[in-house]
Length: 255
Ligand SMILES: Nc1ncnc2c1ncn2[C@@H]1O[C@H](COP(=O)(O)OP(=O)(O)O)[C@@H](O)[C@H]1O
Ligand SMILES: [Mg+2]
Picture (cartoon, rainbow, N blue to C red):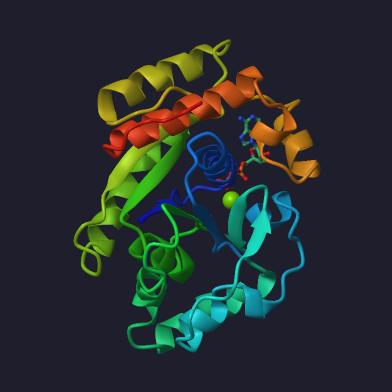
């Protein structure tokens, strides 16, 4: 089992879209057993997969605050999902009072044994307790980076946080950087991508900004691979997924 957390403290980096679509692709095209975990109180991942109103018992809250085993996941589009809800914000507030609390997601996930090939955790757009919980639970991070000056500029803080989290998880590292929201028509984006190619490794092929498709897929509560299978948008996600597997040293078995 590999645990990957999609991590970038910046909001709007395409963390949640990446988690959903790569998760779907790992399950659907690579035949892997995938668990998605939503650790963002905004619960975008949950609502974009059709689970908008989960009760707090179905979230990670009790595992983290009361040290209980993980809840039974929902089944969506061939994936398992432990959703979030707004009450996860309580974890953000109460975790600092719990000795060892920030390592509990790591521990309860390992207790699942070999039930999954991949666990993908979607983290919130902050550097708070929940982001720490999600990063420390991981074997490695996937870092989506918008192809802008601001996007590239945020990577320094991501790397600094990885160093901090290593105090509690020595193996933690960035397994894969993914350029996101890329618009090849815009010179600034092309230049930012060039800078990323110099600075960031391993770096995936960019995922294009497609303002007509992504909001519709979110509204339909489905991954891009279900909304428009075989479309250029879907093929990009499949390419990114194969590149991620290659970066992890896993053979790609895409169909
Ligand atoms: N490839 C894309 N093309 C167009 N819009 C996108 C794309 N990826 C993400 N978005 C949009 O950008 C916004 C931020 O994406 P999201 O996945 O929520 O990022 P994060 O989780 O990092 O905040 C969302 O409104 C989403 O619909
Ligand atoms: Mg998000």
